[in-house]
Length: 223
Image (cartoon, rainbow, N blue to C red):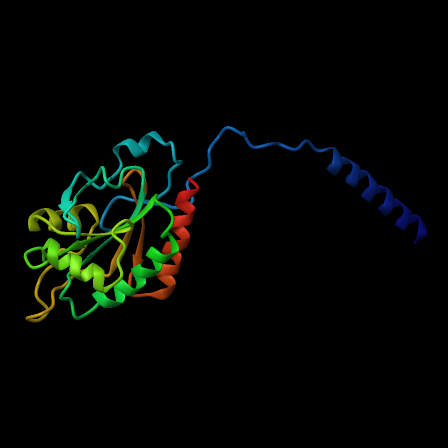
């Protein structure tokens, strides 16, 4: 028995030496990893994973050019959010349903990034005929919305609805009447990166989902 134990110990020692001597294969240091967050390019919200410098992104879905007016009467275009990360949403000031809850959740985003000029919120009115600059300004003041951080935009109805459905992939029934006072609209919050690529979709009525949004914004900031 002692002879067998000695033989086993010798074999284990040989194996240990061979294991230590095995070469370590390093990963190429210059090869960038895939981005932490996926990219979305269709209403199915199928995630696509790319490296941040992937040539495939040149032809991947982006939010197109736009032109609206905010609560201060300033023109808002794609240049306003150039090189910025922003959260897009849809609302209207008379909304009796989900908008107050979404506003409360977006206030958390505003507070979290209030001192970061690279993070913005853009909320589009789906009732632009009523939501004039003056109405938006009153709404902003009432709800403590900081115009430097959170833009409430109004403008051409067709452009807003086209952008909502084709760029941000809102439901096709957006804007249809639920009642005399309420319209169908989306509770989705859409995270857009500095290159106007969609990087996340979140439920604006859900605390956990909005907490994930805040976490993902911080991830994008490090890309």
